[in-house]
Amino acid sequence: MKVLSNEILTAVIKKRQTNSHKGDYGRLILIGGDAHYGGAIILAASAAVYSGTGLTTVACDPLNWSPLHAHLPEAMVLDFKQNIDQSIVNADVIVIGPGLGLSTMSLQILKTVLKEINQNQILIIDGSAISLFAEEKLKLKFPENTIFTPHEMELQRLTGIKIGNQSVEKIQNYVNQNGVIIVAKSHETKVYGPLVEPFLLKVGSPAQATGGMGDTLAGMIGSFLGQFRQASLLECVAAATYLHSFIAENLSKDNYVVLPSLIISRIPKFMKLFEE
Ligand SMILES: NC(=O)C1=CN([C@@H]2O[C@H](COP(=O)(O)OP(=O)(O)OC[C@H]3O[C@@H](n4cnc5c(N)ncnc54)[C@H](O)[C@@H]3O)[C@@H](O)[C@H]2O)[C@@H](O)CC1
Ligand SMILES: Nc1ncnc2c1ncn2[C@@H]1O[C@H](COP(=O)(O)OP(=O)(O)O)[C@@H](O)[C@H]1O
Ligand SMILES: [Mg+2]
Image (cartoon, rainbow, N blue to C red):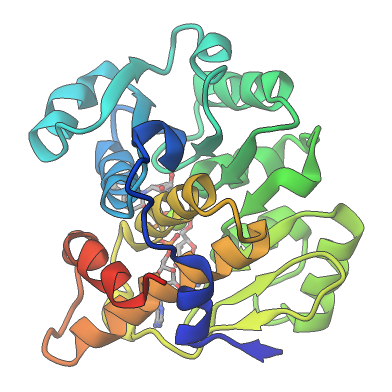
């Protein structure tokens, strides 16, 4: 396995061109945040905006619009119950799952996205959307443009490989057979791409073990994928995953618990250290 280091950040994070504009830094739509899990989509969207996404849209339950805007006026909002097929048309990157929930409506939203997505769009499937995808045995149109970000329980649901038995070899086989990227999250997170040696994360801290931490990562990954077109999908995913835990580990030196929102607030400063 390749151990990730700061090198992945300097390879992926680029200085911005003087004559660039918001349209050059990704059009991202994040879909999730039902009536119970508004916080998840607020964290994912905040992580995306603070990682540099040019245009961020959140499709969620309208109950969450005001709380979202109180935290993040930069984001645009849509109702996830209405015309999700049209909502995704202009997106470069789609993140689905943080706080999406497991309702019939959530499933319908996921199915519509999987059906309407086009080959130029990148899809990140996280949280509830992984559980629904697995439960309903759904199919991908463009596996090569798809990233799953499961924790161990979600990985078990997705692949059938039981917690405790999730060896590198077994996960790599699943990735090779299905042609997707998987971020297998745990205290020793690994990033897998088809037919390549996986990346291993050696940064991170148990101070990260708090709700919303993975939602934050999903937003960062979506943001990197929309911005850094010179790098491969796998490199973007690896860089965002490394940065998330690198910031957390730094903060854990003088914080007993590292809140997702604290990590989010520090993303721009940490990215600035590595731009090249
Ligand atoms: N503030 C919010 O609105 C939050 C919403 N969330 C959303 O809640 C939904 C359900 O996600 P959950 O992950 O809570 O529920 P799940 O039921 O999918 O998974 C949680 C279960 O998996 C177990 N588990 C085993 N290994 C694990 C590992 N390495 N990491 C994490 N859990 C492990 C946990 O003990 C727990 O019983 C998702 O849509 C998620 O985005 C959560 O992110 C929590 C915060
Ligand atoms: N003990 C730990 N050491 C390092 N990282 C951890 C630890 N516990 C959790 N994390 C990280 O926190 C995140 C948790 O993701 P997830 O369980 O999906 O959170 P949520 O769904 O609540 O947002 C992952 O990136 C995981 O690697
Ligand atoms: Mg999660």
